[in-house]
Image 1 (tube, rainbow, N blue to C red):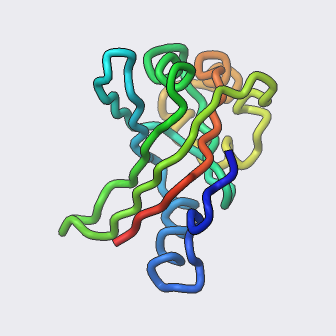
Image 2 (cartoon, helix red, strand yellow):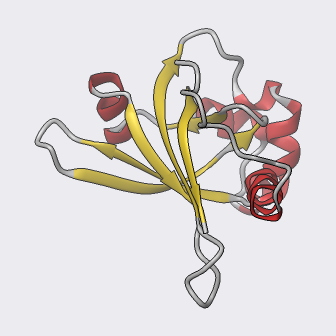
Amino acid sequence: MAPRKGALLDSTTAEGKRAQSRLRKEIIIWLATTGADGRPHAVPVWFLWDGKSFLIYSVPGQKVKDIEANPNVAMHLNADAEGGDIVRIDGEAKRLRRQPLAYRVPAYIRKYAALVKSYGWKPEGFSREYHIALRVRPTRYRTR
């Protein structure tokens, strides 16, 4: 699942730098999968971007079933108020069977600590509920 040639963001351009920054800082990314019936399923998810791939923790459910049946996904960040600042990603997702739970991933917990607390969870409790780890490796980026 290595990115195809040209799939990496060009961080030497202003557009690429802006996209990289948003991928590090944004709280929500939309993940779109395809169901067995061919219908798209798009959901907002928490994610950790490491510069090469996305780590997502999930509850068991539709998106996990979709990814196990078809690893091709699309993701995007919300646009700005004028419909610009677009960051879209095509990628290949897979379920990680040996990934530590979220509370054992310091960067993930740092990023979402306030939100986890706001829901009345402790990191361990959140990690027990959202215990399925998914990795998305980008195959193409589109920015505007």
